Amino acid sequence: MSIDEKLQHYLRERAESAPPEEFEDLLSLAAAEGRIAFLLERLSQARAWPELGIAARTALTQDPGLQAARAYLKSDEQGMAPPLGRDDLLVLVDLVPEDARALWLLGVFLLDEGADPDEAHRLLARSLQIFAREGRFDHLEDGFLRLLETREPGPMRTALAVCASAARAGHVTEAAGFFDLAQPRLAELELAGEAWAVARKIIEKLQNAEP
Image (cartoon, rainbow, N blue to C red; front, top):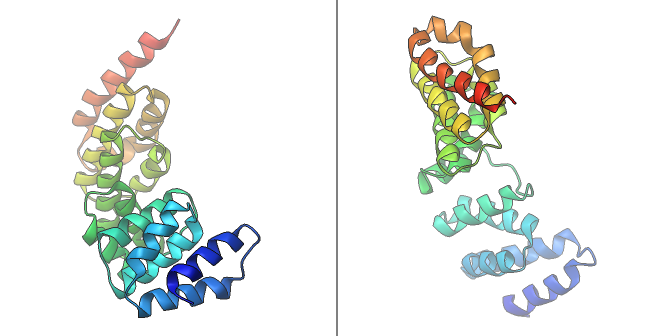
C-alpha cells in the first residue's frame, strides 16, 4: 500500500480511534520515502493536530525546515503538540527567529530547567514584545511573572514597553498589576524613572476608565 493510500485509510479510520502504531508506521514510511513534507501538508489540511505535531517533531529532528517549524507551531497553538527538547527548540527558533510562540517555548523551557536564566528572560521578553505587536496579550500575566526574576535591565525595559502597549490595548489591569509586583526589581535595576513614565500613562488610563 502506498503512502497516499495509507494516509487516506488512516484519516478515514482516525475518527474511530485508529491505533497509534498505525500512525507510527505511516510516519516511518513517509520518512523512508522522503515524503514527510507531503504528510505535514495533508495532516494540516485534515486538522489532525496531534499527528501533525508528532510528524513535525520528527521532521525537526531528521530534516528541519520552515514547513516543519510552522507545522509544529500550528499543532502547539491547538495545545496538541508533543514537547520538544532543548536541541529541537533551538532548531525551531533558528528556523523562525521572529515567531513569538517559538521564542516563548524555548524561554519557558530554559527557565523551567534552570538553564541560562538570563537568556531565558531575554527570549521571554522578546516573545511578549512580538505578541504585543501582533495584538496578542494572552501570555501577558504569565510572562510578566516570569520576568520578575530577571537580573538584567534589558528584559525589564522590554516588559515596560509591553506594559505600555497592553494599557493602550485595554489591558490596563494586567499592566498595573505588573507594576505593583515589579517595583522592588525595577528599583534594583535602576529603572524606577523609566517605569514611572509608563506608570503615569497607565494611571491616566485607569482614571479615564472610571465612570
